Image 1 (spheres, rainbow, N blue to C red):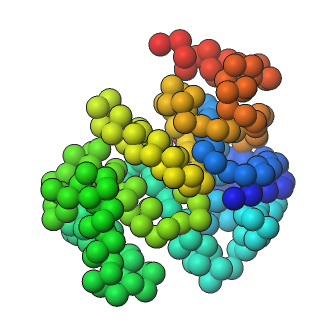
Image 2 (cartoon, protein in one colour):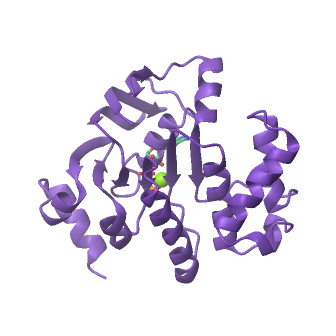
Amino acid sequence: MRLEIRGVSKSYGDHSALTDVNLSIAEIRVVALLGPSGGGKSTLLRILAGLEIPDSGDISLNGDRLRPEEDWLLRHRRSVGTVFQSFNLFPHLTALRNISLPLEKVHGYASDDAAGLAMQLLSRFQLVAHAHKTPAQLSGGQKQRVAIARAVAIKPRLLLFDEPTSALDPEMTVEVLDLIAELRQEGRPLLLVTHEIGFARKVADQVVFLHEGKVLEYGNAQQLFEQPATPEMRGFLDKVLRY
Ligand SMILES: Nc1ncnc2c1ncn2[C@@H]1O[C@H](COP(=O)(O)OP(=O)(O)OP(=O)(O)O)[C@@H](O)[C@H]1O
Ligand SMILES: [Mg+2]
């Protein structure tokens, strides 16, 4: 998946969250989006997910330009798999239904097929025993794995994860990170905001460093981690790697 971002800006009131962002990724593999809090990572991810519209600029995926029209955005949202830190599961539905309902209602699966695919994913992510529990009866790690299973179920052309482990304790974090490493093995294009720098170092192929609404660095992950070019990224890595 090829991504082109040209001159994208986004403000909230008089606060500029993204300022003239330019980024060109020839082939998204696993891209870690890093940077200090408030730098615009979530804003950029929401824009890519079609949940937010930039004030100016152009974005295209494989040459397909994101259009600010409601029917286009609706179709786009159905083609990407998003996972945010707060899980966003339907509280009144079981794990199984959380996965199968969108397949039926949004993606036109017959109910048997939807249930079959949902079970298959639950099994793959070691969640079969929890299929008939509602989110309130699941642990944080289990909820997040259901959310990831749901995102993957639609066979998305792009996965967008925003700090999928930030609400989890270390053990559950490992479960979710293992799952993400597995998705990487499958070669799914994935853009991931994470504060788990150790993990980013392990799985990311490419790194984008966002600072105060600007992309300051983009490149090969290993290279950027070893030799950040800007003092901002150097300072950021020093800080997050200190403990
Ligand atoms: N809906 C909103 N309304 C007003 N301001 C917003 C909104 N969303 C984001 N902002 C502001 O835009 C800036 C960028 O926010 P964003 O959430 O993208 O940062 P971030 O890099 O994801 O930070 P963090 O690492 O803390 O999640 C911040 O200053 C934030 O306060
Ligand atoms: Mg954020």
